[in-house]
Every structure is written in structure tokens, then in C-alpha cells.
Image 1 (cartoon, rainbow, N blue to C red):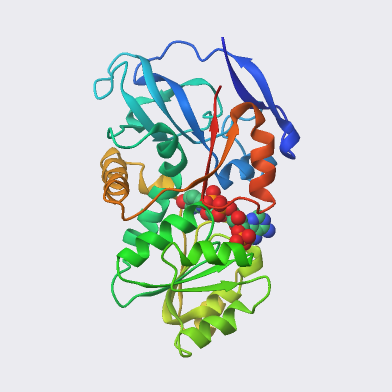
Image 2: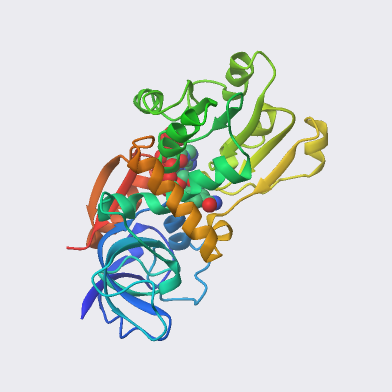
Amino acid sequence: MVHAIRIHQTGGPEVLTWEAFEPGKPGPGEARVRHEAVGLNFIDVYYRTGLYPAPNGLPFIPGNEGAGVVTEVGDGVSHVAPGDRVAYVGPLGSYAQERLVPADRLVKLPETIACDVAASMMLKGMTARYLLRRTFKVGPGSTILFHAAAGGVGLIAGQWAAHLGATVIGTVGSDEKAELAKANGYTHVINYRTENFVERVKEITGGKGCDVVYDSVGRDTFPGSLDCLKFMGLFASFGQSSGPITDFNIGMLAQKGSLFATRQTLFNHIAARSDLEETAGELFDVVEQGVVSIQINQRYKLSDAATAHRDLEERRTTGTSVMLPE
Ligand SMILES: NC(=O)c1ccc[n+]([C@@H]2O[C@H](COP(=O)([O-])OP(=O)(O)OC[C@H]3O[C@@H](n4cnc5c(N)ncnc54)[C@H](OP(=O)(O)O)[C@@H]3O)[C@@H](O)[C@H]2O)c1
């Protein structure tokens, strides 16, 4: 018997309870993984509060990201074997000391990437990759706006976009976070709690606007984000840390410059095994080359996931966080 965090009813961080758990033997196509580290992501908050319903209902074990060692595999699994160091973004259930994972979601870790780094970066780093390389192909000459620049996805995206040659504008919620963002690829950083970010983006871009705005904040930055775009620019929504956008009117896109808008999710971008391998491979490359440095700025015991959630929701974290199953 191992332990896991279970949610019996959705609500605040107090609903995260540490309980005994038996993962069982892997079935066909599955692997059992002993976690060395578990990722903390804002999507975990959406599931905990019920904004995103858990696909199999209550109770459920939250979490979509982890890294560790394969201990057993089921029939038909050939690309990983017991003893392999692996990481994944996968179905709910990573807030556990051990779990079963569909083996086609597992990627083997290069020797140079430690499990805690992997658990903290797979979901956020692969998100940065698809946003910058697929949703919009960022390159020299691109001007982009990335909200929540000092957060988990934000610090990775800033470094990566700068490496691709873009002018990178970021928003943050404090002056300390602004310093951090500036040290991680952002050319211009705006504190959107004290400054009007739309006016500042217009100043910075000489009135032209950005090619693309990456918006994971949602309610509080909408519709301002649309006003930061150039003619026919792209509004790429990918989250709602301040709450969902509920008043989206497609006509606004015409009024504000024949804009494009999309709502993106990593899970579509890595659904095919070939896409997962390509996306993870590119992330491993930029980390191994030192283009992107992964900053684990918070570590928690997995049993204390409630504190991790409080810190994340109350905007006290920067960079990535991991939880350790002791
Ligand atoms: N669609 C996808 O594929 C995908 C994948 C990964 C992540 N995401 C989204 O990307 C965002 C970032 O995820 P993350 O895990 O890296 O988290 P994070 O950025 O480390 O944390 C969220 C940040 O959002 C900012 N924020 C602004 N208003 C907020 C509010 N009212 N409450 C809480 N935070 C607020 C805070 O930074 P400031 O204090 O600087 O404002 C906070 O630190 C989340 O919205 C997440 O859902 C989407």
C-alpha cells in the first residue's frame, strides 16, 4: 500500500487529503511508475475547484504530471521496461507515490535531466513549445506579449522566445517578479497591477501592437489583450488563472482589427505519440543545450499539496514547483 492525495468533494485546498492507495498491477498497455517527483500546475486547481470536472467523477486523485522509475509493465508494452527513468503528462492521478500510467504517455529521460526537473517542466515546457513553435511560429522580428511572465510556463516561454529571436513583452504582478522575468528573456516587463498594460504595450510597440498575445490569465486581462494586437494579430488563450472569460463576442475580433483568436490546450498537441515524442524531444534539447534553464523555486511534500495549491493560487510562486512523495 502506498499513499496518494484524493479529492472526495471539490472545493478549496483543504479538500486535498492524504490517504492509503493501492495502484494495482499494470494491465495491457500500462506501466506502474514509482514517482520521484510530481508536478504542480494551475490545471490542478481547476480540477480541485470543479471548474474542470474529473472525467470519472468523484472521488479522484488529481495531477497530470510526474517523473520516476518504471517498476512493472503490462502486456504489450515494449518501449519502456522496469528500471527506466521516465516522465509524463497524462491522465489524472499523479498526486500519488506510485500509479499506473498508459505506457504510450511515458517518455524516457535523458541522463542529464533529473526527475525533479522533469516533473516540474514536462507540462509547462511542452506548453511553451507548442505555443511558440506551433500555435504561432515565433521568430526574429516577432513581437509577442506573454502574460504571467514570471510563472511556470512564463519563465520557460520567455527564455525560449528570446532564443528564437523575438521581442518579448511580459506582464507580472510584482516588481520582484519583473526582475525575474527580465533575467529570463523578457525585453520589456509590465507590472499589470500598477500599470495599464494596454497603454504600455502601445508605447513599447510604437502604436503598432503585437503579432501574438499569449493569455493564460483570462478574465482580468480580457478584452485588454485584444487591444495589444496588431491588425490581424493572434489572441492565443490558454488558461484562466483569474477566472474564465465569459463574455467573448466574436464580433469584437472585427472591430479590433480582423483579429484571429484561438483557445489552445497541450493535450491536443501531444495526443499522437509522434507529436509527444517530437514535443518532449525539443524540450529536452533546449534544456540540455542551456537555452532554457528550469528554475524549481518551490518544493513541497506531496502530502502537503494543500500548501502548494494555496501558494500557487495566491500568486506566491515563481517559476516551477514540485512535490516530493516522501
Ligand atoms: N492550455 C494549456 O495547454 C496550458 C498548459 C499549461 C498551463 N496552462 C495555463 O497557463 C497558466 C500558467 O500555468 P502555471 O502552472 O505555469 O502557473 P503560474 O503561471 O506559475 O501561476 C499562475 C500565475 O498567474 C498569475 N495570475 C494572474 N491573475 C491571477 C489570479 N487572479 N489568481 C492567480 N494567479 C493569477 C500570477 O502571476 P502574477 O502575480 O505575475 O500575475 C500567478 O503566479 C495557467 O492559467 C494554466 O492553466 C495552460
